[in-house]
Length: 386
Image 1 (cartoon, rainbow, N blue to C red):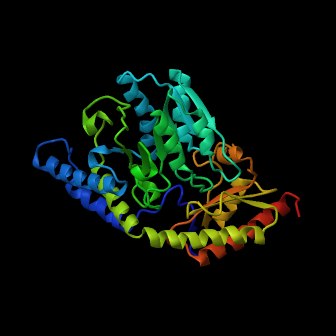
Image 2: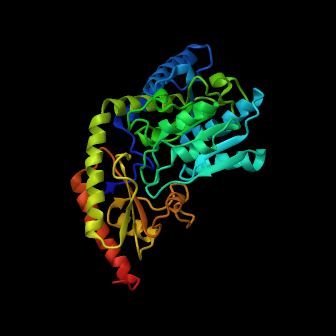
Image 3: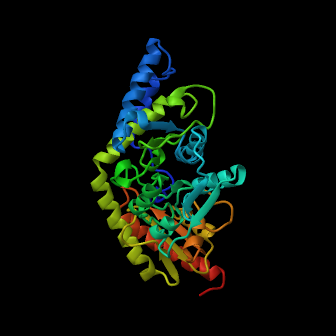
């Protein structure tokens, strides 16, 4: 039986071996509450502090400006809702938000919550056919009423890199905060919070080979958030609850490994990405490959096929030994098309996202291409399309 090929790294990477070992080691010595003054607590605190310094350095902030969370979704909600809470507590009256139509659903839902439950005004900016937001369209909406603008670094469905720097300039002119969702790029693309011009930056360990259930929010000098839950004074009152020290230690190690191999992994994935983009329309008729060729995430290829159901395609490819994804990353079981593709105005039917890891080879890519072409043909034939 042929080995399976995992092509869903945009959802979650396999845990890096170094991170797995770090988690096991930390679990043995850093299980205590790091806020306690006894020996066991001090051991946990020491490991937590060292991991925090490592992660903070990776995104170019001071360790006091990093907030650990339970993953990317909580980090996003802390950036969106926590920034609003902090502004309210300081008496800031800005109640206007701007985000792009292709943000991760966690960003969109958090912004909509502020709109629906707290009376904020929300402007959602469209994108072009490649999934890229127009920074001039964002700039036209930002004014002195704007609390924050939310623009991702790389799109999670089609891989488009967004013009974050240009958006940052518009925010700076009006004193608005810029939140950059970098869950798809931290540990995969060279970046820093200052280099992006961001005030708040969110990350997920699962996207670069760290453990599931750990993420972080990095804050710039103007970035302030207040905890969404009350109960203790941890993390400078920015997030209540006991820190997962083993998970945090494993995240820091995964991030160190990812940064050390950044260029090698980026180049290897880019070769496979371009190969898939070129070969897919050559092998299969009536398909669209989405997103830009250049200025794109190295690990994401999105393709839609006419006359094919996306979930059926994923299921058949899974049977053939290939793990891929169809539809919106947080609504794959809802039956709804990807909101990203809808916003782009492109073909949503028969959508598959192929996300490449550092171990994905051209041989793996060619095997996937053969299986994809065969499965699409069979599904079309079964539906009466020749």
